Image 1 (tube, protein in one colour):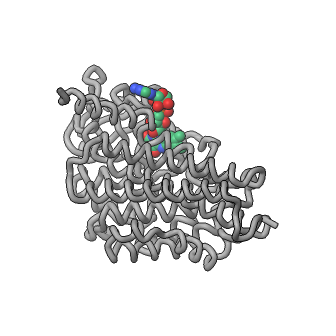
Image 2 (tube, helix red, strand yellow):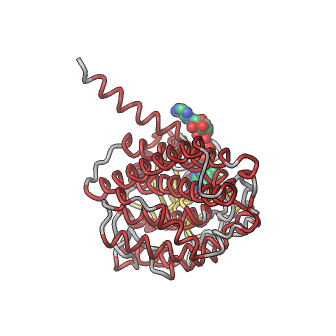
Image 3 (cartoon, helix red, strand yellow):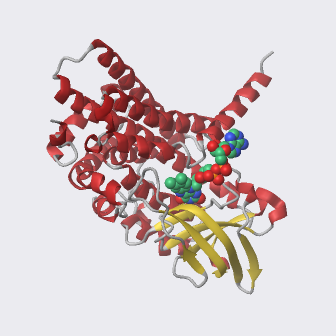
Length: 406
Ligand SMILES: Cc1cc2nc3c(=O)[nH]c(=O)nc-3n(C[C@H](O)[C@H](O)[C@H](O)COP(=O)(O)OP(=O)(O)OC[C@H]3O[C@@H](n4cnc5c(N)ncnc54)[C@H](O)[C@@H]3O)c2cc1C
């Protein structure tokens, strides 16, 4: 009976179910433009992204065909100025769009957000020449990009970076290894963080734009992963790569502050994925329960659905509120960003987990797509600063507030 569920392959059914799940109380905080962008995204997702999601997950093939319709619909440069090919929209619009894409296909949302994450540091700290040379291609999807920070011995603690940038006539030479880099196997443009002075810790870090075809750049094969299959994750090796000084982003030693400015947007991306995956799991559970039990559900099932619906709404409101604050106040604290990131990504995991359990053995079936939401949700709790690190940042703010108490 459940084999014939066609949510992902029937765009009209997809649109109807997701319309039903819109919450007026959350929509009231969105502008007409943000609502319009959501509708446009949802339509592309229903027609071109969701129908490919199960196969993308099964084969692990890079989600190029799902990502391209999004950029063709003008959704590739939401946070970027018009002269670089963007649409100069709000962070809230970006969060809403990310939520919609993640609800249709987690892997496609990861490909999409990584394009933004690669282009954003170039926008923030690149020269006008670097911006015009690299950003438009990333927003149009004619080039793929990566943001390469993590190394085998430097994950949460970025101050331990061992990739070195040594000065050379006219620029630098980069040597080292990056790991777990999204789109790393195919990136044309790599924003790479390296140290010019290991003894200086964070103060020694700088960022550089390099190209995947430059001499000395090589990649590993994509890792096999639990979820987000269809977004590749790979190592990048740098062997004495010559980099002109003009490809440094900002001043020497500005890399750490660039990481901190960039993670605001990337943590919004991860949080929006959490909300989108939660909504997707909940929608799939509703559809399957309707098919299994009809419209009258057991009280205990309804009580669980009520709890999940409330938590998804809370997550969405938190996401939108923090994104709105980012749009209006440049000084949103790391603890506030952390509250959003850990709450919304834990939400994705919690709702997907609860949804599989609501359906018993059926929850385990690939055809429902709930187990895919669960697998995709896991890594959102890990990347862009693990949730343990987010709790540490929140804890620091609690301690500071406690210090102020009598
Ligand atoms: C699918 C995927 C895609 C990724 N994409 C990218 C990318 O595009 N670019 C990039 O640069 N990186 C990327 N990463 C790497 C990711 O950001 C790191 O895995 C993450 O920062 C954690 O680093 P680590 O794996 O080295 O873990 P570690 O830092 O070694 O941490 C291991 C464990 O210890 C905990 N821990 C560490 N320090 C503390 C502390 N002080 N207090 C409490 N707990 C702590 C962590 O929370 C974690 O549970 C990706 C990872 C994955 C899995």
